[in-house]
Length: 624
Image (cartoon, rainbow, N blue to C red; front, side):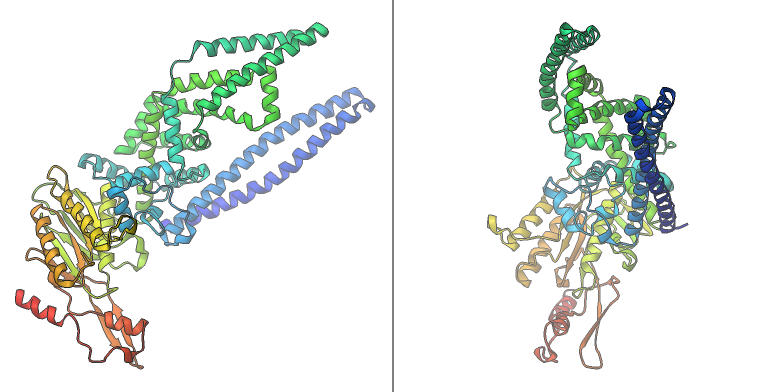
């Protein structure tokens, strides 16, 4: 069964379960209404009925109503779970088929600036039709944030990467677990702001001290006021009524102060509370699943040993009671009769003090687990993608990949080899417009990012050494700060060279698209060669795309893409691309043909126009 067939079968089954549950829910809803009306009607006419019959009908109606309510809740839960599973399966099909408009926005985006934000923008990691869309299962803000760290930060150690790979290999074969977790994440309805709210929740737990003695004293006093009210009710006299009034007044004064403390202490955690139940359910799934090799298994064992999930389930239950404030009448009555907020205040303080040691560990480990599940889901959905091999040995090739293709292009992607076989290796890729140069550049970069996150890559073979990816693709001017396009390119290039010359960090892999295109050809040629030589001396490796093959230094390897330019029956230009990279520099351009095809009639472009690369080809031949 292919991944698409699996998802369709699961979606169809979930839809049937949802429809059946919805039908039962409608019946139970009507039954609840009937039983409630029966109970009310019996109470209204009970004086005209035999007592035995009235009690039988009344108790039977009330009992039946309570049973129907409980059953209705269970059926609604089945309906919600089936809807979530159906939606998760539909999302899986949309990812496989690259139907971007059917996918929800990614659950996280880059906010730190610097290289992570630049790389994410240059290589399509975030935003519309991005890598984060393919990594969207489960849709968890915590997992998405951790994935962005793994993708965009400097690479982890080989040991850490191999443990991630071990887990992804095993988890990609556990499609039912992957779908179940994705469905639970759907139910959590996490938003990008959830990660910040969860951080606020962790800080709230860690800010706890020991439960103050005043809280225990307040609880004792509230219990005393309850006893005073009960005594007054039993007396059935003016004195009793006074005792009841005193009890209610005392409870309301104490609960008012307790509510102010609760609001102050829980400020900023409200958004997180609505998500915690779903996250705890996911944790319970992970703990119950069979042991998995690698980093995922380490998380499972730690959660079991520390009993983190059960401990936090108790905290979620306590926090859920705080939602009582959204039912004003019930909240007021609970405060007046039993001092609800006094007891809740003390219970919250005790709970967060008890959970202080485990909250951060739970969130960190759950973030790692969700990130691994996302990588495994993408590997499951693309069965032909492989897990690459890392080799940091000095003699190992920095990158050796065959039939490498861009992950976002689906079945239309054309695979090409990419080889940077020694420190300082540079590929200078030339060719006409639209022939595939930038896509080739991005395919290399995005697959390297995936590999260094621990995921599968779109290739038949890939071996690489850990590296820091640095890119200059989407560079823009900044009028507000007086930075021209060329200056912006220079500053980006400076940052890449500076990082490359940091010998204490992993090697840099640079990706330049039309390097220094903001200046004239001769200056660009000389400057680009100087930049290449400096990067090569630093041991950096990378790819430079260009329309000018003469920028290549003697140490660089020249590759090119080509296009077939012809004429149709009406003498209009035709273009055909095969998107295959080939050895050597480009030998023709297509800019004039594109202008003629899209912008102007054929009379605008002289039929005998000279190919602007003719002189460059002659010069390149002389240099060779």
